[in-house]
Length: 355
Image 1 (cartoon, rainbow, N blue to C red):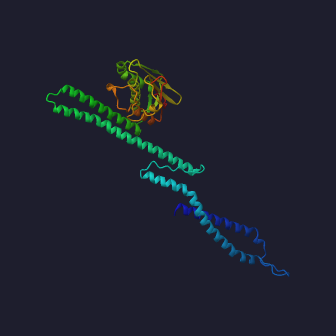
Image 2: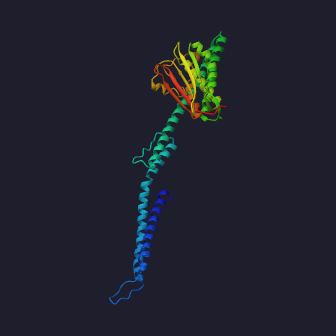
């Protein structure tokens, strides 16, 4: 039986029971006080038996009419009440068939059905955005992985047709292309691992990770003439050091690479708050509009005005990895442009007791 039929039968049954109770009240409080027979010299006066004999058929007809009225009215009311569910079900079937652009947009006053429809619309919007992001990611990853392979094949084809190839230069160039392909593959694997959230949490001091990342990135900063300033308090976060260290390293190296051509600066700070451990990384650089800053955490997105060269071109996954790692740790990532140019990136992670 459908839900509409069950509701209609329930409405009708409730009306019949209510009517039967009303008749029982009439019997208890009225008819039982009438004598069985009334003998008066003035003529015929109906007794209890006469009243019951006259009242019972009419009461049965009333109950039957109430039953029919309850079924018809219940069927109509149930249809009106369940119509939002039919719209939600139709939208769910369209979503199951792959159409995520459909929205319910249920009209009327806010009630339980309206709340359910709004939540379903929000879920469809998130699914549509996530699916579109995954498609862009797959297309960009395929393109980025195909590029070094195409370069390698071109180098080998040119060398095979060259009667006197420079093998040292060929090997050097192939090594550079292979290194870039390996870096891209490792970045994709790290991004996938962070998105899955498959790691065990332990207390991690962000200040120690900053020291390690700064030590690793110091030669790069010296080559680019960027002043690297790191400091702060011990900030214990709950998470995976294997994921948090690449996150911090990516932030520091991105701040160094995407900086002023000369005389730039990078500032890294850690801070312990009551409930969160905070990592702050800010750098100098070109002035970035807010609409560009909002896209920097998407995979393979690079700011058009950000300075970079072939020495450390990157693969466009640095901030995407940072965002995925922070999200996997139930943290908050804020990327904002600095008034004088550059970026100010703040990562807040759940605090942990010091190990």
